Image (cartoon, rainbow, N blue to C red; front, side, top):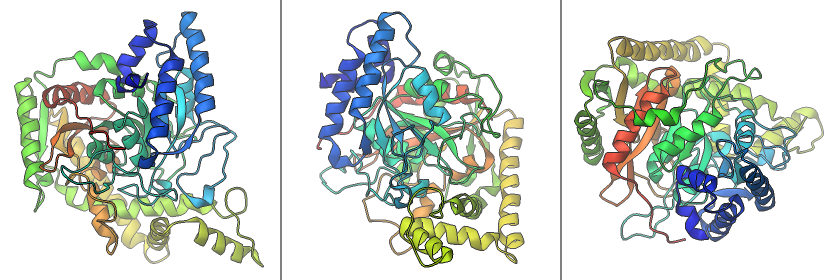
Length: 491
C-alpha cells in the first residue's frame, strides 16, 4: 500500500471519508516508508505502536460517522513540540531524556481533530540554525539532489526534518516553527509549502522556546491546500499563552477558490540585493507575471529599514534565547553533570549539554543584555524592529494586499559548505525571511521553479496581520502556474 504515501493530505482525507482505504492502511504505508528512508535522518523517534492505535481509533470514528477534520491523517511532529510521554529533546543533549508529562496546545488540537502521530522530526538544536546541521542527532539529508551529483544537501533549518519528511512522502504534513525563517526557508529548499502565520495565531504553549517574541508555529505540507487544512486545526486562541490572539479562525481552505483579481501586490526594491543570483531574480519576475496574469495589480513599494533587519534580528533573538535557555541548568530536569559545587554543576551541565551554535547565541545574547551594552545593542535593535514594522504598516495603508519576494537567496547547499569558518555566512540565508518575524506578520513560501542544478526554488508572500487567507489565495495561483515538484527517490 506504499502508493498511499503519494497522496496529498486533502486527497487522503477525502479517500478516508469515502472509505476507499482505512486509516490503519494509510498509517502502515507511512510507517514502511519511514523505515525505508532512515538514511535521511528526518525522524529522531518513530512511534509506530502509538500511530497504529491512533489510526484504529480514527477508523472507529470514521465508521461511526464522527470523523474530525483530520481524522486518520498521519503527521510528523517537530521535536520542539511537547508530546505527552513521548521524548521531546529540541535536538539538544541537554534534553536527551526529557519525557513531557503534558501535550503542547498545537499538537493537542491536531489529536482532537483526529490526526495520527508517526513520530518526532529532527530540527536544529533549540531551532537555532538555517541548515539542520546543529542537531545533536546529526544533520537531516535533503531528499533532493543536484542533477548528476550524489552530494548530500541540507534541507534548510531549523525545521529541516519536517520539510524533508514531507518532501520524501514520510508523512502527509508536519508541524514546524518559525523564528526567523525556519518554516519558509526549508520549505523553499525542499519544494514544499510552508506558512508562518501571524504572531499570536497559533499557541506557543508547550513549544520549547527560542525567542518568545518571534517564535510562531505553522505547518509544512505538500500543497497550499494541505497547509490551509493543517493551519485551521493548529490555530486558535489559548488562555495558557498570553500572546495568543483571541480571534476566530477562518476556513482557510475556502480561501483557495477566491479570485485574486484586483488585489494589489507590492514588490519591495530593497529585496533586490547586490549579487542576487540571476535565477532567483528571474523566478521573482516570473512570479510577478503569474500574479499579473491572474488579475492582480503590481506596484513597486519601499521598505527602507530592511537592510537593518538581519543585524537587529541577531541581537533580539540571541538576547531572548539567553533568557529562555537559562532554565536548562541541571537542577529540575534534563541533563545533570554532578560537580563539587552548584556553580560547577551549572557550568559542566551547560557546557556538555549545549552545542557550539547554541553556546554562541547564548553568549551573544548575554553580552547584548549586559550592563553597559543593553542600550547600545538591545534597545537599538528594538527601535529598529519598530521601524521595520512601521514600514510594512505604511505599505499596507497604501492599499497593498500582500508583498512578493524571493524566499531564499539560493537553492539548497551542501552539508558542511557554509558557516564552518564564518557563522555569519549561514546567518545570511535568513535575509529574506527575518523581516516577517520582526514585524509579526504572516508569510508563506510556495515552490515556484527549479534551479539550474535541478533543485527547488520558492517565492515568499507576506501578508497583512491575520490575513493568511490572502496568502493562501495568492499562493494557490503561484502553485497552479508553477506545478508541483517531487524529488527522484534515491534513498
